[in-house]
Length: 623
Ligand code: BES
Ligand code: ZN
Image 1 (tube, rainbow, N blue to C red):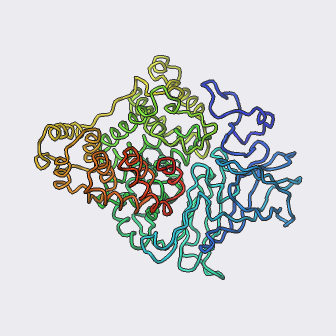
Image 2: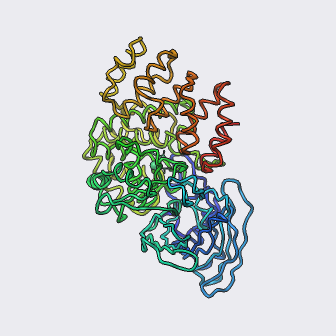
Image 3: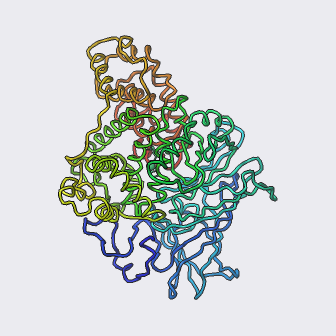
């Protein structure tokens, strides 16, 4: 079970911080999460029942959250996380008012809500409403959707945004089951990261009501909802796609391999434990590529390339059903346990479904991102450590290629050392041993030492696990990925650099990943205006419908001030809000005197349509 459930109040006063050295807390029964006000050792939330109405005019969710508590007998209060919530009342099951106070707001953490607990109270109901600017919620006008007729709402909980729409203990170490009833305007459908009990809803005064239930205990960052004109297409017996009617056919075609992906992952890592696996394709302002909300991955429409070439992102979110959702980082300092494991699983799923060469290309692209990040942070920088010290930071800052690609590199290195069969067996058992719990980096080290290394000192010395987890940079024993296809692309890069015209390059059958590699290799070069025009004319890069290829090309275009591509750049920046794409493009523009006014002008127009996750990042770039 989760460590934080153990009742040792005295330890709570020690102020244990999330990022200590390798010897940290091995002997301590629970982990303090510095990004939550919760005091789970006194009273902790085990179940959340939501009853909410969505008001699109006021951009507000309002109603109640009924929390079931696991409390110490002498607990005087339960401490919850909130941010920008209007709390109307707190009552017990008999409807008697309970005393509560809201603490001082912190710009990252929000405000603690302390509710006094009379003896024997284990269920409390909080009546509340969200703010129109709640960072977890993006309310879209009809014009921001594909259909253009209906408004849309979606939530984004990770890392610590759930507290802006649900008053609960918002820590990944405090797992909770949930149930919900959502009332939405007529003509709209609600979906959640849960079992959908009423797919079509039921008529109620003022709209339709939808009911949901998530019977497995999950970290609250995985509570999620979306409301809009949402249709469904099955892609298999337990997989399918939700999207606006205008997009759903294209999405179903793009994700035609979903069922096979789930089967491949089960064959590797054991049964899928969540029932159905569906994907919701969101409107283009969704700030992430994907978000692994259980039973219902949320995904950006920018992966609808038309040729299934960007489905590694789906493999990634699916993989989180094991690494992340089943076995969860206990604190955001352990974020690499979610994303590093998942990035490794993503490669294994892609290899199983699409072959070794596709996986090798993805792995090399990931390694390039890692090397770029290490060069940017500095090889000695504490930002390049897997187990991060996030004191004073928004946990969002943990989302760098370090967690993803250094984490994946560690697992690949262990796999190579011990052999695939043995490693796969350990990993499958690791998911089973820790299923539905939240663990730390120290727990991972304990598990792998006990169950895989098992006292083999030579192996221990070879792996250097402490150095990987608590040290900076990329350790020297990291396995170097290699792609034959990319070696062939490199030969074409050289030919082009040496003056061969674009039409003479053997690029005819290149995949998206080969294009990414080719364009990535040219980014640092200085190309002539003629060479740029030649590439563009020959390969139609400015009008590419593949978002990854287009972004790689636009970066080259900005680096060379290739003006024919600038209208496409502006169109791209104003038509989607995925942070991974916005960040480099705005940063590239801002790095050039001529680009700054253009960046400011585009951002002024686009900003109101971006999600706050994206504006928080881009505000720091475009000034
Ligand atoms: N869980 C992440 C998204 C996330 C990370 C949200 C940190 C909030 C804070 C998700 O699984 C993810 O990693 N998405 C990536 C795609 C992936 C293929 C690397 C993304 O959105 O780009
Ligand atoms: Zn992820």
